[in-house]
Structures are given as C-alpha cells and as structure tokens.
Image (cartoon, rainbow, N blue to C red; front, top):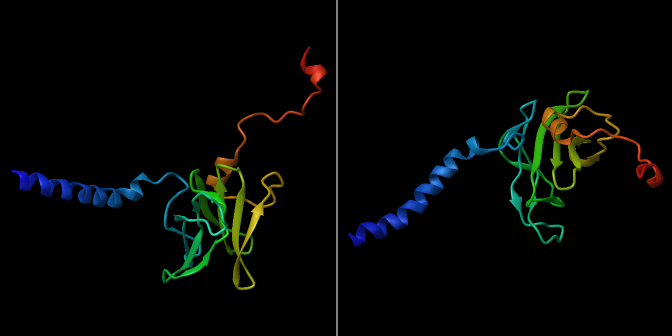
Length: 160
C-alpha cells in the first residue's frame, strides 16, 4: 500500500501538468491566443513571459515574431510590458496589405504596433487619441473609454 501511495504522489503532479498543458488553449483569454497567425499567414506571434533584458525587476511579456518555419525573426528584447498585468494582442493589415501586430498593455494603457519596414521589424507606440490607424477589435475593446469625457471645471464651479 505504501508503494502505491508513493507512486501516486509522483504520478499525480505529472498527470496534472499534462492535463493543463493539453487544455492550455481552452483557458486562453480573448486577445491572448498563442501562437497567433498573421492575416497573410507569413508570420505568427508568441508572447512568452520572461526575464527583462531592460534591467527591470519584474518579468515581461516578450513579443516574438516567427516565420512560417517557426524560426524567430524578431524578439522585442527591450519590452517593458509587465508580466504581472495583462497584455492583449492581435494582427491586422495596413492599407497596403502588410501585416501589423498590435499589443495593448493593461498596466499602462499603452498600445504598441510592430510592422515590417525596409525588410526588418520595427516597433512604435500608437497614439490612441489620434486614431490615425484602424486597430483590431480586441485593441478597440480594451482601450475603449467607458466614461464620458468632459472638460474639467474650475474648483470654484465644482463646489456649487
């Protein structure tokens, strides 16, 4: 009986790990699917949480773009997307049909776009308030302001 209990103690954690690894895709939040294929099918993105290469004292989401063969062709080694908070991502195309990766960080409210320029991947911060581009639905949903924007009133007017 002791041998059986001992074997069960060793097997149960392994079975649980296999179960959760197999069910991982079913537990992914909206906007956090991994790997996620680009519209053209040329690229996928994975967002592992790893140690910061930017001398931060917290783990970070690390956008990693891979080609069709699964080879990493771009890694944002200077990511500051806190792994303690949620980030959401999705692809869409620009007006020329090029793949664009969008990443929203819930900690800071910042949105970053990753795009191909002169044969290499670039990163830029997107200004939500300017609204010059058309973000994917998950980015719009996560950045939507649910409160009405009103001009601030002087303190004396608010006291009345």
